[in-house]
Image 1 (cartoon, helix red, strand yellow):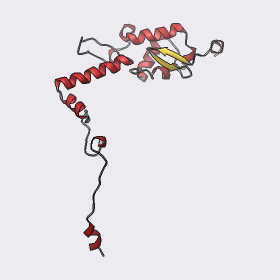
Image 2: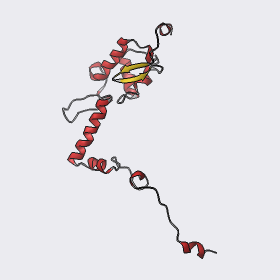
Image 3: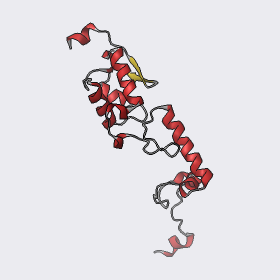
Image 4: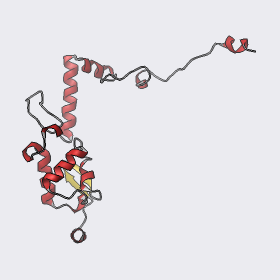
Length: 161
């Protein structure tokens, strides 16, 4: 804590082209990067030998660059393959981990490819229906309009006494 008081707090820390809150613990802060889960954040900080409870604003530039380097190629630093989000990439067959805008770009390309090939998932995406087998009778009303309910006949009310 004494070294943290000497060093000035940076309110924004830039890791993997994302601005992170400097007041949060580094483990929670890096989970705000798209493509970084709680488990991966834990593994990255273990490999980098950085205390997880340390505030992100108190990190030194060397620590920030080390975290960035580990995120770019986690396999090189001994992070297991099952933690990666792009195993056996269809284009080149390599195991990689995508973060930030590259993850969003790749997901969009995958969906476009499914639509082009006209796979089942591609058709469901193009029709705006659920892709992973969810029921559509009671959910996904945005495509069907407002729920109508049951309308009663006028004579049914008068017939009761």
